[in-house]
Image (cartoon, rainbow over all chains, first blue to last red; front, side, top):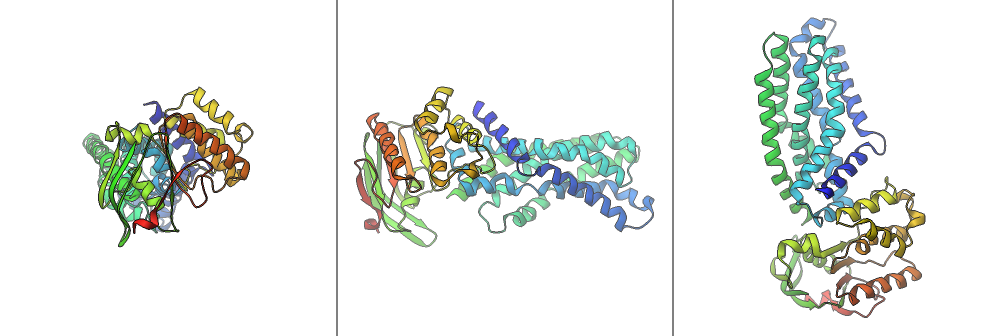
Length: 221
Length: 199
């Protein structure tokens, strides 16, 4: 457990080293959220019915930006070999790195999510829900994204391949997250949508360590 | 300590070697030689468990298979796992603690490898030789009996090659084994295994 804590702290430090990658993801998220209203015309009311969906698509795309960093650099510089020789199983290494990704990128994006939602025309009262849903969904994005990053290891166009692998897997949380905002905007309880979002996270938490570790072992060979 | 029997290894369509058999005993150094592309690195990676051989067996005496990699092997390849943006102290601490080193082990490695003046520098500002010494520190800080080294001394100057020879000999004297892919002779008595002969 101590070794995993050491790894986890290093991952957080690396995420913020060399230019603050999480802030770039937040900036990209906000840029997308501002561009859509500007491109969609002068009537804010027309955007409101799809504001939740747009904010979640922007969140999903922003979550992909730093995924290439997650395993590819460690693969290229030999860190993954070293991690394989440590006391923790590779499955837990994958979890530790996904958790660090969530804390380093998912949390800042969750803090940014209310701003993006309001920019897109959602009521200010939904800001806490937007942050909560983005926080839960961000964990799902980090876990599924880690799986995509592991599967893309060693490919020449890793970043693009990660996006192609991961975006289809991001469809459920985007649907559930946007659904939570839409239900709340219509005066309904967001509970069922959030429950589905949590179920997705649990599913990803089971699949990602096993499949991600297998993909890394395959890439090392 | 290590017994390899009938090992066949290929990369893609190309067979690197067939039916390679050898052993390395406790206290013995084995220098793996051969031309570029002969399969020295691939052999070491197979021994470390990173590559699955096409045929043959790799056995480690008296060690359960699931404990070999996590408790008995040190691997030092071309890529050292050091991050250029981090300080040498941070990377040294991570690499050694990840493998289970305590404070005394880390201090001993810093002392033996004369790393103290380098610890507050960014890794990217180290020379290739300094960087190799920093990567070597994990082998000193954490005692593991089998060292798998891929051209371990190539970036080092004559003084540090000799110093590494002393450290390697001390490891062998403690009952360890060293298997090293090399182009130049190791600075310790070593048996030579030419991988090219196994094609």
